[in-house]
Length: 311
Image 1 (cartoon, rainbow, N blue to C red):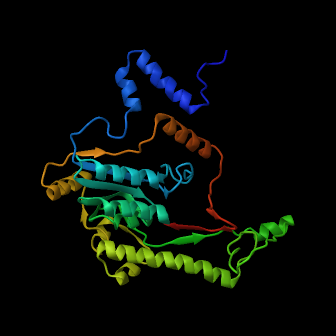
Image 2: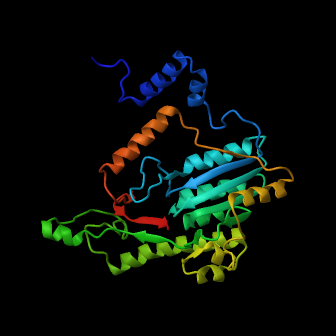
Image 3: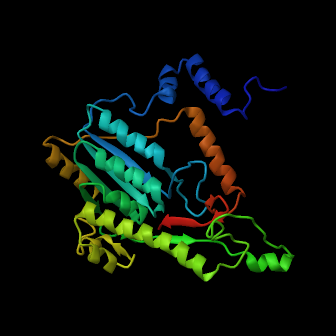
């Protein structure tokens, strides 16, 4: 006999869970399941927002190479903006545990931190690399643990080259374009020297922007940033060359924020304002991806397959 609640429909499933909880007298459980981001408490003055895993725009493309799910940039920006609008919040603690990711989503998060009205401290947990450091440069201070991995101020661009495979399979490439570089980077043909120079110029442009962003945000000499040569550093070494301001635990960071706002620090974690149905769907998509949807992703832009990331 078919169930009246179709388990394949996450909206109906979510409604069924909440309805069942309420019907069984679990009013408190039903309230928790449907409650928004704030959790019903007002006893806080620090907004805690976490960036974990690869940084990307689309939350439906989880990384198969990381145990953590991706950080949907738009969700994180929304959390920071919500914290900025919350009259209880006086400061922002941005926890970073990310190897980096897409360029513009990383910059969107950084800009949200810059626009926050109040003290902002970035805290590197395990890893604050590349796009994570881009974000941290928008905060007033950056803290880390002595064994945290920090830095990797660089940009990587990549493209698959399937020309040899296409030859073996007898596949020829033919495309009609207008504009000399319209098909630069297409994987079914060997890359020409002028195309390589053109694509490298894009990566170089992002790198110069990265250096400029860090230089302004961290008040560092651009030459010192270039001298790091995109290396990653232990927190204890990063603090010596100025990439990190202080070393400490999360409790130390909260104590520092308490000093900045002049009151006892009480933090509250801001989370994505997703419905239960959306959370269930996102979880199902991650499981499906891990179950066999592949181990690599390429950002496709028109006819050109080139992946440019801060990592």
